[in-house]
Amino acid sequence: TVGIKKTQKVLQNGSLFDPWGVFGTPEIGERKIERDIGTGFIVRSDGLIITNRHVVEDREAEYVVFTKDEKQYEVKQIDRDPLNDLAILKIDATNLPTLELGDSDNLKVGQFVIAIGTALGEFRHTVTTGVISGLGRGIVAGDMMGSSSEELENVIQTDAAINPGNSGGPLLNSIGQVIGVNVAVSQQGQNIGFALPINLLKDALNNFSDRGGFGTRGYLGVQYKMITKEAALLNEVPSGALLTLVQENTPADKAGLKKGDIIIKIDGKSLEDAEKGLASILAKKKAGDEVEVEYYRMGETNEKRSLRVKLESLDN
Image 1 (tube, one colour):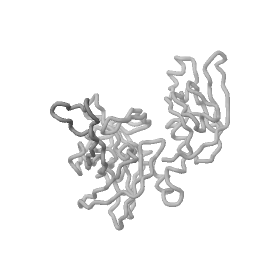
Image 2 (cartoon, rainbow, N blue to C red; image 1 turned 180 degrees about the horizontal axis):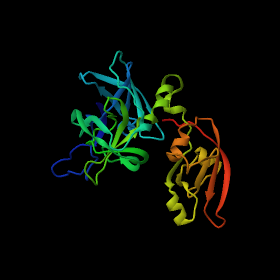
Image 3 (cartoon, rainbow, N blue to C red; image 1 turned 135 degrees about the vertical axis):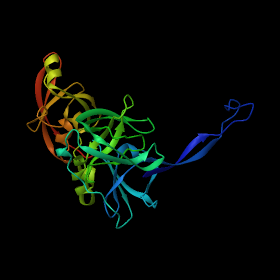
Image 4 (cartoon, rainbow, N blue to C red; image 1 turned 180 degrees about the vertical axis):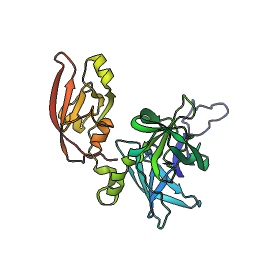
């Protein structure tokens, strides 16, 4: 279980005749927040823990971890993934029990799964079961507080009950291997939950000690939506990644990419052929790599262009 500790500034109650502080300056007080906000699971016996990035998104807060035997540990280090809703936590501990990681590339619809988490941020170690209902889904996920959201691709859909507070918990196969990280629950339907494939994490775990985990991953600085072949034909544009936002002063912005461009290829690799779209190609790139980007710019000429982009690291 992952918990948060934070001191929040609040307005003190006014007097009976001036409850809103109209006739004077209202007093500022402090309120301490301590609560369970998510779930994690141990992948290395010296205290390496996986959770969702949105669980530990507040950079001004302190975080703690409660193990199953109710021991409490302070989180000493957090490594956040700039591309996916994943984070690695480090606590000072030894000889912790760990979970074995499976292979999320070989999953099948209908496969039995088990979800574990802190349901509703209240009921620790809740276990639910179900099957994989779908693969390769695209969703918009938000945090438990409803303060942020992001688009995620290629997630696992399951009917195992996943509730707010389960975020960051493991999705296990029938032999107890982790094949996903629980990330979201549908607010529109029942028995629809989602998990990120565990293979997204493996390179970062290998790099955590010697090269900084997610921090070495190449960063482009865009938000996008994948255009399917059907949508491309209908709109008479190439299939690929339609850029919905190019952040200022990022590698993409410096190279000249603009909102509305459609990235077609990266280093000759067609995004149409990439199983997981742009994210899967960038996940294999490191900060400092220079990549060739072929793209389509909509406008009067509707032409294909190419440019080179030097990827950078992101302070996560």
